[in-house]
Length: 567
Ligand code: FAD
Image (cartoon, rainbow, N blue to C red; front, side, top):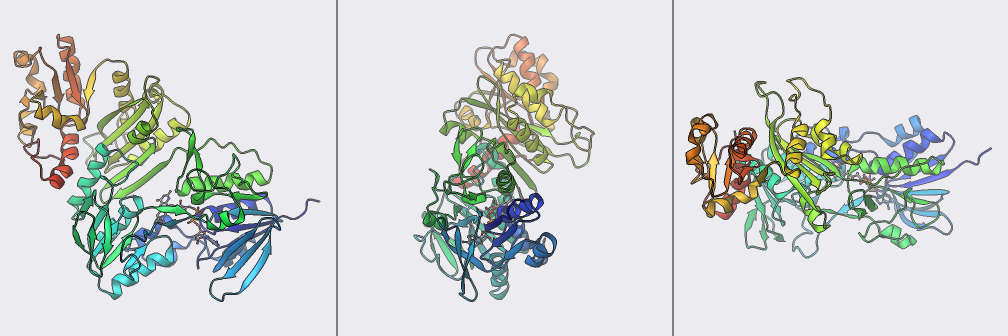
């Protein structure tokens, strides 16, 4: 008979609880003990921000399973308030402190799983960071403390520091609660997985909903009712939420002799084993293999933590695990905009010397006559010259996540833009268009990669305007009157064949419409009518409006459009 395994797990949330549950499914006889230093196991970290707006109206709902349920249903010994303070890897013994009583105990293990997560970064060089009104968000205790502080101190103004997905979700939920909110981000944009051109849509959405957005400034001092940035800006805030990133919890592992990788997170092998015998590690505390960059990276997301947990548990029971690495897929909602991204963005390609190009299309997410059809901004990044799909980002009020999920699947399968062009996706007018936005983006990318037509990016338009380039607006008069590029030539698509004499052949012609479809057709027609230097402006007027709007406000610069139009 096989001897009974004694499995200990450090951390009782995403990775830890998944390891425990998987092991139980594989082995009814194992002793499984899960140590969690906090008061809850198995809570939904990802849903924490929604408690602040009342969308989740009871903090108990954030906790998915109590220790007694783990025991009754799964025979898993989940011990809350138990902090593992030392791993004796030689003797295979854990030293555990009861957080409330201070009592110390020891527990032996045959196999140990580490899933201690990552802790919020709280830089000591920000003066005032230790003050009582400064919070971070990691668990249910944190979110309840924020909620209580707001109620007890009748907080009216909040500052959220950091524009990653946690910061954005906290920002939105505090605003929905009725607070005046300022979001401060040290980089020149929020949501760094999203490229600068696409993220301008998010910036516009944030400011249009009445949040003060401060990018490119770092918080350097926190006072009782305001904070200061390194540019000398003073921001009123009776509560400050820090969300500038996380660091892997590695102190315990390092103390035990577990090796860290180049990223500072725990190094693991193909099967999520550490360098020490019988010790696995999963989740936010480890570094993973990036399947597109072919190097290690940190990825603090719940989906990968779950997959790693299952794989690491399977390995213990001799099941073959295929670790293909990770590509990084994430989504977030910012007020009315949904945002999703997968794979590599432009910065990652540049930093890693990957030859790439991208197309940015704006397509209707449903057939346009359907009342709630909305524009979808979709960017597809692909390798040059192979056309291998590298990344995809989408922003819009509709179901952008579905499109990015499909792209994620394609990337995982090593697909090329040709494959995406032909991909058969579900269609009915209520859900999509017969040519899905993804098929559409792939077709545009194929046209570009095959040199069938040329386009310029929205980011290049300001420069074209300042150089006095010939920019041709092919929208109809009623659209043109609702905002156009200053100095552009208005030659509507419906009459351009009669007005060829107004279109020069001796200089480049840059064509745009509302969202790209009409201008593309005009580009094709002109190319066949003897024009050799014609370009489509990707994103067209809608994309230009979004791209320019926030930076115009921030820099108080002269707009290149007579009026923005976000419709
Ligand atoms: P965790 O789930 O954080 O669990 C680690 C646990 O280990 C902690 O509870 C900690 O107390 C415990 N622990 C640490 N050291 C010890 C010790 N020595 N002894 C005992 N216990 C210990 N990801 C997404 O994919 N999508 C999202 O929308 C999303 N939203 C998020 C929103 C918020 C506010 C937060 C905080 C995270 C969000 N994440 C999201 C990230 C996701 O929650 C993490 O990637 C995931 O929880 C990582 O799992 P983990 O097991 O490594 O760590």
